[in-house]
Length: 300
Image (cartoon, rainbow, N blue to C red; front, side):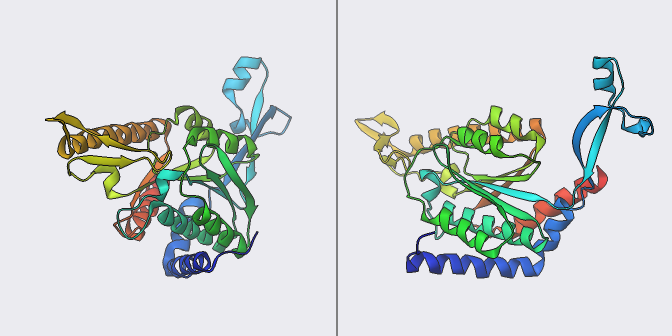
């Protein structure tokens, strides 16, 4: 990896110190309670052999093929965590002190250090207009610092094709993983990719700026597309001008529709979902997510 600019080194170091402190304060334990100890992982279906436990019979396969088949499981000794991080142009936006991409980098680092503390492997996929970087899973601290640097150093522009990137990543995975997908999910159509990802343990982490869902009501409204770089005047014509209030309302309604569709999709496919905001501390909702998932697994 080439030598990093001093300002990027300082950012990576700040994120490392902040996230390691949070890991020491209990994040690692929360991670362990909801992602470790899953017991046995499905490996394959094979023909029944004398001595096999009859409780392992796969009745669907047995009925379809006309002879007994059993499910084989292997012990989950460790986990592989894969972080699919959106680094397209829209993640470079931030109306507050922190841009969405910086928040994504910090959350990715926090999850990664928690995984390493539990002896798990961590890999990363950076996605923009497809899969632009794939870092294979590893267990080294330098591996986490590299992924943070890669996220922060990507150029600010670029289009999004989250679904194409996810399909490429899924095709490269040869075992079940815990898959965190970090994105703002703007204009993302992920139905096919998320269906394909259901064999993995998927967590959708929605990274949002308040202006993503509540644009300012100023007139006229000039919007710059962070991915194409084009600026457009947007809204409804009123006396030759474009009113910011109506434009903001239209954007707000469209964004709510997009978010509602994403949440419905996650529920329908049985995927976990977590929303983090650039203007709010991310630790409380992350801990609440761990606790809610722990309770669900315990009673499920």
